[in-house]
Length: 291
Image (tube, rainbow, N blue to C red; front, side, top):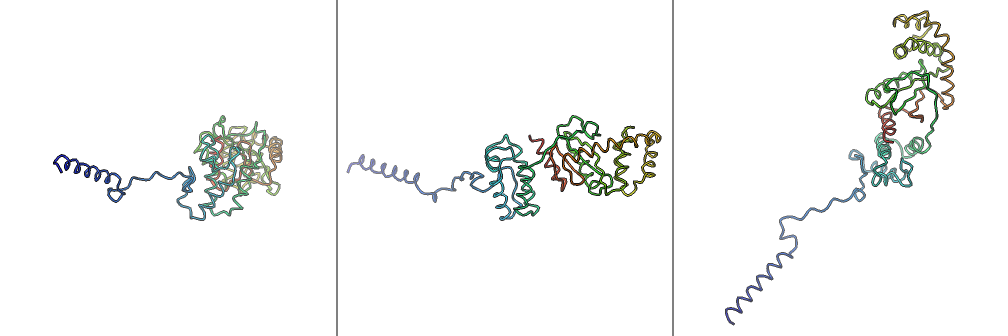
């Protein structure tokens, strides 16, 4: 064998060995190349929702719910599909976050189904004449909360801090107050009339706050005393108070039109809302702002 032929055979062996290194299994490599992340659909994650705090069973419940319920924008697909493929429907994300809260709060699946249906699928909306009602917040705000209230109602007093809080948090929200004195409360009608009378002198909201702060002191003598403390013209206040009955009855008639069964009655942009917490109230507001 000549030197040239030997050299050619050695070169061929070297090339074959080098090729075998290139084609060798991963054991020859320092580390494997990272695998691409699995899409959310494959991992069971729900876009836009932080489900880390949920147990496996609660996470499965939430997934069933977003698969079952229709898009909050009324489109012919589920919330799950809406979250994954319809970024224009911001309302579906708001609705899904609300479902996450309900699951976190421990509601049963049947209870959540009922709440979702009532809020998004069978929500009752009305037109209310609020033309003479006092307003707190920006009068041109796009989100309007209408509150039908009774100054002797403990539940009405309890909701006041929540309403003040959202007015402080959201510049695009306004509150409209409507009187709805209940027959079971002996001083409620006079208190409502007194608040209207105070409004005639530019002090409705101050008087409103005073009544809720003194819910157990609303006799006629108390109502006049509050007017004196606010330095109102008491003679005018008393005259306006007697004339205010018609206005209060008009408010109450509007409440009957929206089928109120008690107080407080809350409508957000004309649709009934149930307020169990400040988080729920925020959810309603954010839903309206997402439209």
